[in-house]
Image (cartoon, rainbow over all chains, first blue to last red; front, side):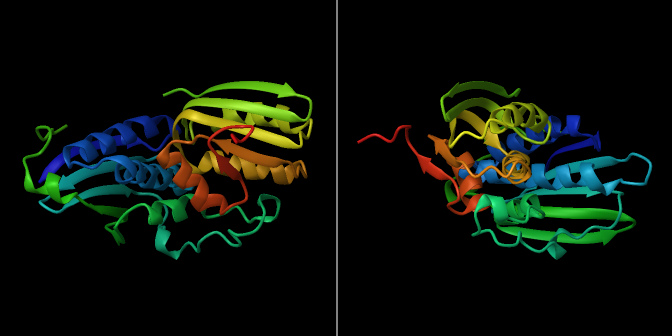
Length: 153
Length: 107
């Protein structure tokens, strides 16, 4: 079931709108606490990465965000037409155990995004990067009606 | 939500109280405040995060970059973070920062 969708310019100012969509979808799906926080974090980190690097050397583009829900899962899909980028190929930050002064700093956002969802998929389709974030809905929420009516934009 | 930062420096201890959200749109605010604090190289940086509702990697990265760039080895205390913020910090710095409920530690 389609819940919500949104197209925003790939600019930092769009992060608030993306977060609002993801959090509203999380509420509809019955997510709370860390699950809700982590889904927002995952979408935020991936969108931030696209905004910061995805359109470098290209005309400014957009990010499409879509939320879908079924009985067991909530899915957030982020798409852009930037340079091909598969987040799964980013190695986790090196030396996470080292003192802060000695750490490599790259890859932290992608690492946190991957840690925050139950499943992550990526595909390059029709010149678009498609990042798919899937979280399992809590059993009680999945068994009952949605907390709010679906909304189309 | 905007980020609000209040900073108090007492001797070698710098305390920063953060409220709101710290994401990629707000990290410049944090960077500016943090650079001013870190330049004096306090031995302890106390981050009071009770009212920080959201933290993304941009905030962690800024803190680590500042420590590295200024060769600043002060101890970082994280005080009373909310659940999600605490998890981000734990996953990012793996014990490099000291997380506790109050400062100085009760008891």
